[in-house]
Length: 82
Picture 1 (tube, rainbow, N blue to C red):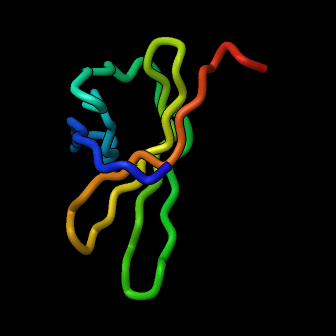
Picture 2 (tube, one colour):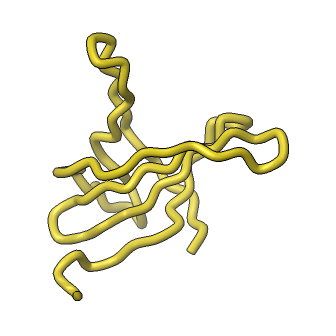
Picture 3 (tube, rainbow, N blue to C red):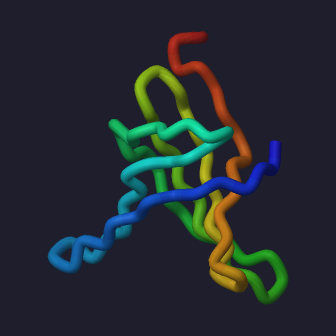
């Protein structure tokens, strides 16, 4: 999966952390209820931020590309499935 999505992000100046608050995917809004891991990696000259989040019973992996400021949804899973 590699779909373009919209993400509402909040930056907390006190903790110096960026936190995704909601995702728009396929014309539906998903409110982030839990923030998991956040890490970065380089792909050539690109710096990518990867966020793992939960919205309801769904797990999303989001990738933010700092070279073009675009968001991609790279993985989605139903959290209830083991």
